[in-house]
Each structure stands twice: as C-alpha cells, then as structure tokens.
Length: 240
Length: 219
Image (cartoon, rainbow over all chains, first blue to last red; front, side):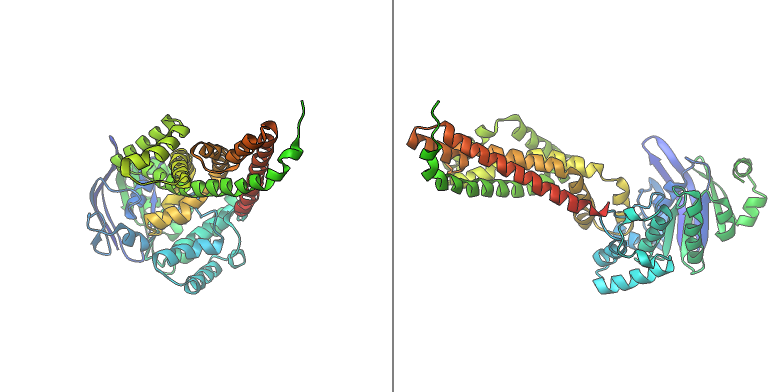
C-alpha cells in the first residue's frame, strides 16, 4: 500500500507538486492523467525516490520512505519502474537485462535468475528473443522486455511512466495487453498515461493532476462521465 | 650523401630489445593512467565539492607543466626529497601514469556524461547500488564511446615514452642514440627506430579497430 501525505516537490523556485495527498491500496491499479507539465511523472518518480520529495511523506507498506533513515535501495527493489524510453541496457542481451539486477542486487545465482527471466519472457511473449541485443528489437518488444526486467525483481508495486508514448501506434496494443494481464495478477500499479481508453478500462481509480495539484481522485466511470472540476472537463473534451 | 645501413646491422638486435622496453612502458603507463583517470573522472562528477576541486586542481597541474619537467622532477628530486633511490623505469611509469590520468580523466568524464541518463535511472529503479551501476552499466558504455579518444591517448603515450631516454632508460630512442655514438652514424639508427615507432603505432591502431568492432556487436 502507498500513502502520500502533503507531498511537495520543487525544482529550485519552481514548485511542481503542491500538497498532494492520496492512497493507493494493495492490488489497486491507478491511472495518473493530466496535461503535460502537470507533475504526473514527478509524482510517480517520487514513489521510488528517483526524485527526492521537498516536503511531505510517502509511506510504502507502512514504511516512511522519505525518512532519512530509510534505505533507498531497499525501497527501489520493491518498486519496479517502466520508462517512456525503455532504458534497456544496450550492451547486455535480453537475458542479461533481465538477470542483471536479480543477480547483482538480490544475489541470485545465474541459474535461478535465468529461470525467472525465461518465465517472464514467456509471459510477455518474447521467448525467442532471449539472446538478442535490445537494438534488434522493435519499440513494442523493447517495452515488453523492460516490463519483464522490472518484474524480474519481483516487486509488489509497479510504476509506469508513459509506457506507450514513445511507441509507433501499431505497437501500443501489445504493450497495453501485457499491462492488462499484469493488472489481473493483483500487483499494485501506478500508470502515468495518455491512453484514456486504457485508463478507463483497466484502472480502478483515476488521479487527475493539473498545475501540480491533485484536482480529481475518482473511479474511472465517474471521472470520465461526470468530472467535478472545470479543468478536468476541459481536458477530457480535448482528449476524448 | 653516403648512407650505410650495413654498418648498423650488427646493432639491430640491440635496438630491437628497445621495443620491449618501450612497449612495457606504454602498457604499464596506460594501465595505471586509465585506472587512475577513471577514479579522477568519478571525483569530477561527484556531488562533493572538495573532491571535485581536488580532481580539477590535479588535472590543471599535470596539464599546465611540461611532461619532461615532471619526469625530471620525479627522477632527480625523489632521492633528494624522500631519500628513495627511484629507478628510471619506476620514475618513468609513475610520471607517465600520473600525467596520462590527468588527460584521460577529462575524456572519461565526458564519456560518462554522454551515457543517457535513463541508464542511471533504470539501474537506480532496480535497486542497483552506485558501484555496480558504474562498473557494469555506465562505464562499459562510456568506454565504448570514448575508445577512439583513449587509443589516441595511448598512441601519445607510446611516442612520448621516448622522453624517458633523457633519464637513462634504454628504450628505443636511447638505443638509437647509443648506436649513433658508437658508429658516428646518425641518420641510419634514427630512421630505423622511426620506422619501428611507426609500425608499433599502426599495430596499436589496428588492434583498436578490432576491439571497437567487437564492442559494437550489440548495435
């Protein structure tokens, strides 16, 4: 479970997140949407401390990760992340990408890490790509490998930062399908996305951010049909 | 003009032994130099200011003074300052490594900065600590990008190693001078070692190209 209390994040004089408070229950799938520059990605990146919050608290499974006593590396092991630009390790094969962190961070043997990797590659439908280098894969395949790489650490929480924004249109579906399958497994997911159809179908809740404020926090059927704020109404008129 | 290569032929084995000395010098200097240069480059991108200052200051000293002066200082002044009778080889490798570290640290720093910051973020998000992240993810990609620059630095080291002839190391250069002194012929021994240097540099360039091709197989 993730609990965010009065989270503030500033870059110099620029306040990007303003007093955000919310909760994500275990197994919940939350879509974070909003116009660009609204702080969606920053909010997501605070949850695994890629951005260090300026003020406020974030609790993951009851542990205050913003506390100075908290072991950042331990937190990140349990929170997987998928990036817009995949960020696969280009000098490692698909297998190397999947086994690196489990072996280095968790100390798994090559055989054990390999078993997990093969299993995950089958789940994302890329078993035949085991020994390829990332440069040989299409965008959609890269992103599926990136999802598998994050899952290889067996995290309880998965963060997705616009996972389909850098993909050609015909590759979006294969990635969303993998994510849909993942949502059904009961893992906690926070997804920054512009795919409104996907958010509506898969998310249990929608967070709408604008100008650093959490403007709406509602189930998708309510958010997409009758948003409370003017800002959300305007946004939806433009994107739907 | 009367050239007589025949007269220095008996000295050829003597000259060729200098190849090993020169190669050994270059290899050791490059090895220590690049290792130290990598450490310096990490200081330069560190968030701790005094470490950055130290690395900048270090670089400025070695870039701001002549190499032959540094060499003379280390060789002739070490016995005077700390009472240790440093051998010419030790003094040479020591000076060249320190000097090369200063230059290569700039190159390596630029190489690290050029690695996409997403690589760092991906490593961090997987819970990978700083050391393995640098060693396994960032530096291999950085070195791949700066390989041509490091080859240049190695070539410079190979040729500059001729400077150790000034402190009495029997390297290629020094051997040519010895032969010249014995035979009173200058052109022949000097041109012979000139050709040997050239061949060694070409060999190094070829080896680097093979290495580069191997490193690019993931592209």
